[in-house]
Length: 247
Ligand SMILES: C[S@@+](CC[C@H](N)C(=O)[O-])C[C@H]1O[C@@H](n2cnc3c(N)ncnc32)[C@H](O)[C@@H]1O
Image 1 (tube, protein in one colour):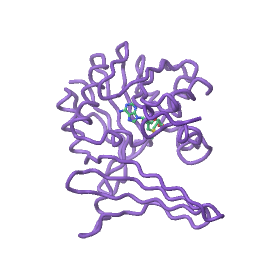
Image 2 (tube, protein in one colour):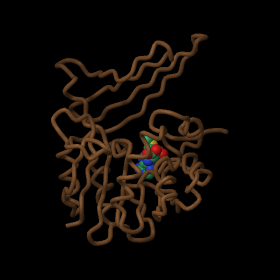
Image 3 (cartoon, protein in one colour):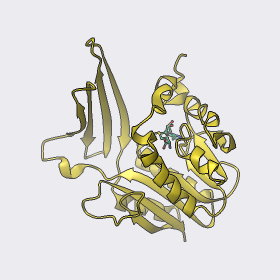
Image 4 (cartoon, rainbow, N blue to C red):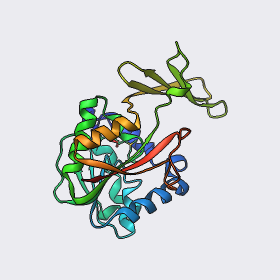
């Protein structure tokens, strides 16, 4: 099938292998996230950038009423075939602007996807749009990596994050610390020497900048954990799971 440009960076050719076993799809990655989201849900929940339902489907399977908002039709088309996925109510649209019918106890945006919005204004709009979907006392949860700036010595802009000689795979991020834009780069070389290079643009924000975006949207920080195990966020945390609450 030919990729549809309207599906952005996650068209059919990406969606087709998104659910491959292991990594972010492994039960040890999915189950703790679903457990935390279930514990925070106090009524209907909405996943921004729901993708193929990696998290939304198992959450719905636990009985939580889940809606999803997603830009890519190719990704969203996979949700219904998963256990629980048939219960996820999906809207195709842009999380910076699209309004999903209903009021929610929790809106969540996981797996670094706030970074897929590549401008500060756009990220602020995500927070405002999330807040607009919350009922009083509702919460917005974001899971995202801490920018890897401590691994960038002066004069260097590239941080490698994966090197596997056996799989012929190299991954590296390239940072622009002026614009806060960065790209994730994935190089895969097959045994016959042919290769594939995929580059995705992102924008990083320090946790404190996200807190300001939340305040602009009328939200206050309630929790900041270093991971789904709710461990304390520290100077050495490489990611955070943050929860803001309506004021
Ligand atoms: C890394 S995937 C995450 C999918 C899912 N949340 C998960 O955890 O597996 C990023 C998803 O965000 C979607 N996306 C990116 N920008 C978006 C936007 N502005 N509005 C809605 N979805 C968006 C992409 O199409 C893709 O499906």
